[in-house]
Amino acid sequence: MKFSKTRPVKVVMLGAGGTGGHIAPHLYRLLYALDRPARFIVCDGDVVEEKNLVRQNFIPADLGENKAKVLAERYSTVFGMETEYVPGFVETEEQLKELLTPEYFLMRLPGYRVPKQVEELVILIGAVDNNKSRQLCHRVFQQAEELIYIDSGNGEYTGQVVCGVRRAFKTYYPPIGTVYPDVLEDTDKFPTELSCAEASASAPQSMAANITAATAVVDVIYNILALGDSTVRQATFSTRMVNVRPELQEKKRRKAA
Image (cartoon, rainbow, N blue to C red; front, side):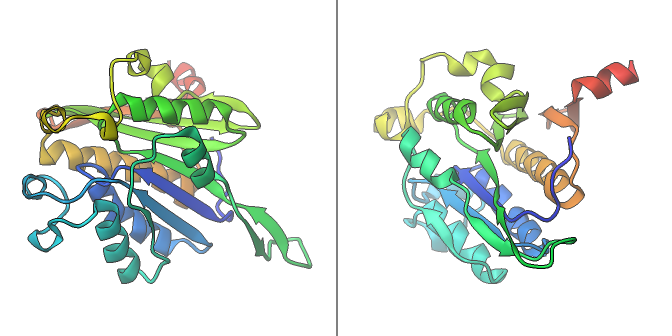
């Protein structure tokens, strides 16, 4: 699927923990290198704890600070970008839709004598650890006129990244909730609904799995923004086997067969 290499870009990332923390520095660098307006909004209501220092992208000096604030201030400053973050959990459709609403930029485009208003290309990254948040993203994606929704999820050694694409109110690449329907089962809670005991008993993850998931997300976004072309709808990986396996666009798969 082809994507514009000139449109302004807005990326909204839900989750600044195990995977989101490793996505942030590389994505800031990628957006900085683009020759067009680019924004990155990091959202997370959690604070950095001692246990996070083992596998998340934080240091002892960050303890007690909001995760989204730490990442946004650290890397936006380094790359001279505007610092944008939400120091809270996004748990309603209204909140998420407002964050994803595109803005317009006056740009000089080839073939036009005067500047033209160009709408942002919006990318939603789900780097969350609960299906309730994924269900929220799924509902908003299904209602969107245009949206790229990239979801990342992993356990201790394995995981997956799914890229959903919507244009003109039509779904071209299915989102995580369609590819893995069990994600939509109502058996989960938002972070603010968890007790302290439930929050501390989250599924085990490893630093390697978080880094691999983050790398796959950045790879997909690089193809979309820098190359203007992406055929990968999803990828699964295993850090034990040191293996990443992509699933390509159906047309490409049939042609290859």
